[in-house]
Length: 160
Image (cartoon, rainbow, N blue to C red; front, side, top):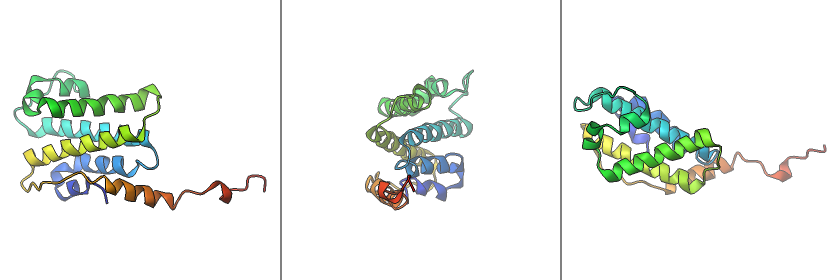
């Protein structure tokens, strides 16, 4: 179970639900992939917003920073949410292009910010909004689930 499973219940969110779920599920295995998937889910969700919200006019370029930087988009999201989205964008870009290590804490922050954005989207666009809180304990369960697949060094006898 992930913090994003609820998105699957509403078909209109199908274009970004699986990527958001994958971002959380992959955290114990690869924090960089988690962050990249956070960025992808956010980008898919923003593009989805442009496709369904008549108040958003598609900018000349449809790259993420252009979509986030329009006046129309700023009219919909407040400064706090925009800063959260920009953090996901920057850390996601760093994970994809820079090669610098991303910490687990940074990945968890991106997941939390993605959750806040997804909550905003469901609040604004869903017919059946239900208030939710981010449950970080679900990440611990994912870590535990992954731990059963890890082998210890004692299990591998290279010389044999």
